[in-house]
Length: 202
Image (cartoon, rainbow, N blue to C red; front, side, top):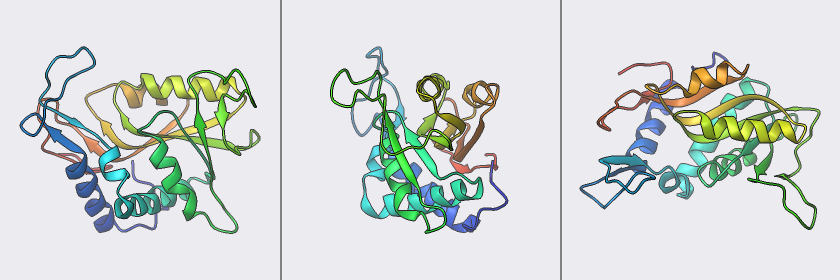
């Protein structure tokens, strides 16, 4: 859901949403793609394609940082390759009064060196927002939240690029007391034709 305190115009958000969606969309006509079981699928979203482009990276970072600032969040953490560009995109957009710091969550604690589960300068006395690229079932996000909590962090909410509205991910996380905000709500189950700014429907 859109936050009232956001300063990014809806027109800019819609433009960014279109760019992210079009650049992330991969169709079977373009290349062979499969699900985790190896079965052919019609389409998927690969958010690393737009988020590892410098121009889109900077624009997305501005929008994400604006929404996080509106919620009073200054710490972000990510779990997995899809989330890491989101964390790093936000960091340059802090201010002197509200700088951003980030962290990367490991699958398991590193067994040597500093033996950390969460890498980075995060402060356990302040709330953290989990960054994720796509919210579907919510299982991966719930796992990341559990890892953060097990390491003593307070998780306030989850910020994503895309939310598949036909899935139960949002309800799963909100049921755990977290706020959930996505830049784009995707509501087509069989085809990849519609992406709209968060809060709209298509």
